[in-house]
Image (cartoon, rainbow, N blue to C red; front, top):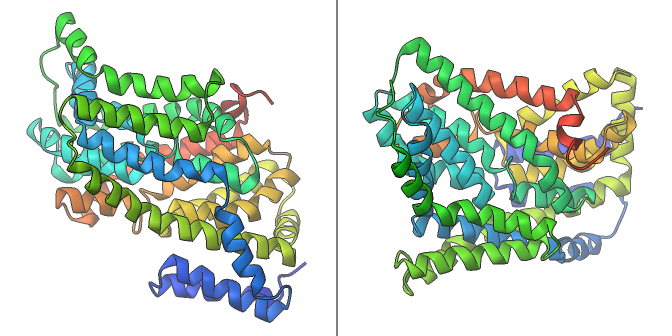
Length: 427
């Protein structure tokens, strides 16, 4: 069954507006209005009603709270202490400073839930140190950009909250399912750096830290190490929900910063303003994208997509591969939030048709979109690192290729082997 012109043209209009640089919010909004007018499915009041109902969900309160947590982690100095701790543990090995940077990205990800915040924070802290230890500036930026993809892959993650809202899965279940795949990708990046470093002899590490130095670093970083345990432990012990855990994360992080005099009363306005600006970008996009998702359902577009996939392949592995290609291209040209809200409702019925577990699909979806963050020429992390380090984007993109190849292989493995995503949650 082919997609009719009255459906295809509004979709092409959205793509064209995005390519022309029209903000995502307006591109999707205009597309919805044209879609509703052309198909005659609903009155325009449907659009307005869905803008409100899309955001009127308790789970979405976690998004601004985790954004605020990420800012507070940086301001309180917790991120620096986490990097120092990782350096004391693995910095003595050859390629140890690079390994410490990757582990630092993972530790920061377990608190912030955002890849861009991860890249910016770790980039400011570690890029200079990596260069001091012999890494070329462009490769150091590529290493951090790759490690920062774990910002949305390791729980707690804003992306998994949005996926849960979109396809109706508990965020706590997705957080649990994401642990193993997220750690797998983290260590994949770490081992690629070890291989590249041994081949090019960028660094030999430094002297091994003594046991007392490791214990001191662990003690200094205790707050950063405890926050993820508080968040995830509280969720899975039933003490609080994922949304409530975000509020706890903010309270704990801010309290640490205030007690250590890294955050003052005057900093609160700046923290709130920065978080409000980011949330002010994300929330309207969520509203219009959810409205577009409802429009897709109303006109039967997911069923058409399922039929297209069914006609092109009856194979689970080929269907997963086709979904991966769609997701990696989308992840390279557009931010995670609109991608999830646009593609999850369209691809989820395909996943169900080929027998894909919903949790497995959610983890695969997010992991594939994460690859897009470092996919040239538009990968977001490439530009974040270019801005933070003042390295040119093209050299960073050329050095990212070994990491990109590893991530592609690992995400396909996650897609082809469901148990990697479901081993902790059950089939």
